[in-house]
Image (tube, rainbow, N blue to C red; front, side, top):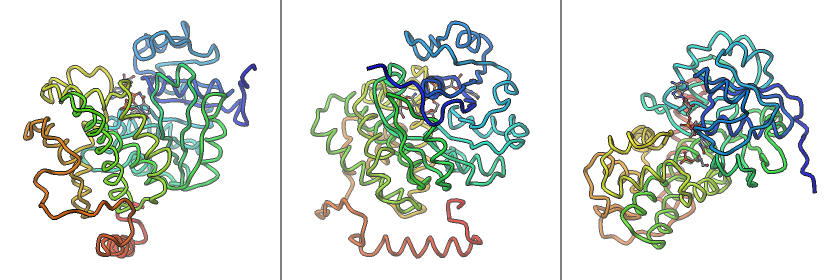
Length: 378
Ligand SMILES: NC(=O)c1ccc[n+]([C@@H]2O[C@H](COP(=O)([O-])OP(=O)(O)OC[C@H]3O[C@@H](n4cnc5c(N)ncnc54)[C@H](O)[C@@H]3O)[C@@H](O)[C@H]2O)c1
Ligand SMILES: O=P(O)(O)OC[C@H](O)CO
């Protein structure tokens, strides 16, 4: 059967800022769904390769890009007439990029969609918060995309799904109609916090799984860490304003499975190098692509401390990164945890002695104190 090449979003003019593995792959997803795609690449030679050869040989070797995809190193050309703008640069570079392109990004009302899965190291802010803060734009204009989305598999047109989250249902729906084709299906929700934290936190658990792999432990250890890791992710996200069910969806459990299972994952790969005994600096040197989890560990643990959430697996990742723990001691629980048997709590009700309830009141008080915005900025 000839796959359908167009969707309800056909003809939408889109711009993608960032021509790495995910920005290029997402450009293919959009173009295969019938959208007009213009990518911005920092390097002129990469823009030329994408535009003329329809290849991105550094990030997507062997993948033929759609004939309709265009690329430029001139940001004005990339953004000219764009009806949807997708951001896919390393999280730690987002704010500087927004400062550079601010005039162009604020001269349009086009939705801005974050494809990134990190938190800003210096502030702990999610990418949508950095966008809203730096552009001083309406949050209803901002969306995020996340889910089990290993770029190379998608670039090879292997079927998968993603979730598009925005505080505006209309914005989420419009983006989902465009980011859809015969091998890529976008679902929608309005839980931006949960969707973003799912993508950020799964990276940290994937680093832990990579460490386990590098050490040589097997499936029991990995399954225990993935299971307890999802509890940590959900505890943290719910404590910071997310809906629990979001972490059980594509942006949480779905992405956790994909990232923890795949050698394509850069976070998993970085963890494996750590487990094999490489130091943090050596790992960074060996990684020729972005492993967002390495920069997210510290700000996430800071936020966990502030929201009174215990994250033993992420704490161990930090200890291994800092060279304070032998990777072979990694486990689903902190070995320094007391010996009191712990209930295997997987839901997030009042089982923790009303902690969730207390946190909900605290969040409400924070919102009141911050003039109606949440503790995390909204
Ligand atoms: N690769 C995937 O499978 C995948 C899937 C989903 C989401 N993501 C997310 O996409 C985001 C982008 O990551 P990626 O996987 O494309 O990384 P990548 O390492 O493949 O590409 C990063 C791109 O950013 C460019 N870049 C580096 N520094 C820059 C700067 N200061 N300003 C502008 N551009 C700069 C690089 O030249 C490169 O083109 C990350 O947040 C990642 O978590 C990645
Ligand atoms: O390569 P990673 O670890 O950044 O994972 C890529 C995607 O986020 C998987 O969904």
